Amino acid sequence: MGLENVEKAVLAEAEAEAERIRVEARAGLDEKLAAARRELEDRFEARERRGMARLQSEHNRELSRARTEARLAVLKEKNRVIEKTFGAALGKLGELSEERFLELAEKWLAGVPGDLDGRIVCGERERGYLSGGFMDKVNAPRSGRLEVSDEPGPAGGGLVVRAEKFEFDFSWAGRLADRKGALAPDVAATLFEETGG
Image 1 (cartoon, helix red, strand yellow):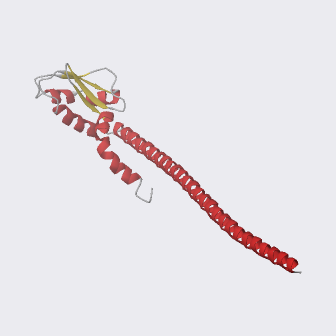
Image 2: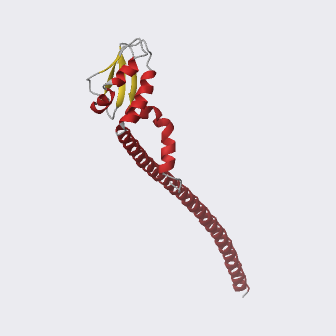
Image 3: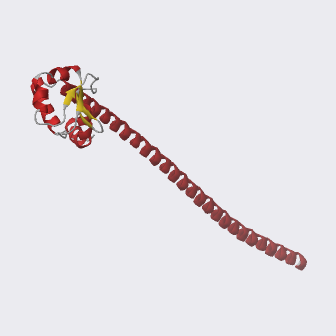
């Protein structure tokens, strides 16, 4: 029985060695699998973070674009209302009383150099105001002569003085346009008192 015991001992030792190798291999494999799993999870998380960052960036760009479009739409509407307001003001200036118009016309025409001859171009209503003794009063201190013309007047009213080389624009539209840049912020502030918009 000695051989049988040796055989059993060798077989037991081989089985023990095989089991030890299997346990070591299993532990190594488990370690490799755990490392591979961690690496895959890390890569997945990195991809997920990059994907989320890309989505967030796209979302921020779209949100910024939408906000810009909304601001532009609000600004466009405010500008439309401001233009409408200036249009209404232009209409009111065209309805100025004869007395007030003549006061302004006298002041404007006094600003035209006295040695210039020229034509006063204005609308039919203003032509009626300037007829009669008013032009005699305007021309009295001047060496040049200003005469009311039958040419069609400026749109919106007022008057224009045309001399040979010069033109003096006293039209309502021109005067309003000259002041529009300075007046627009005040008009906007009045129309759109800051209530968040």
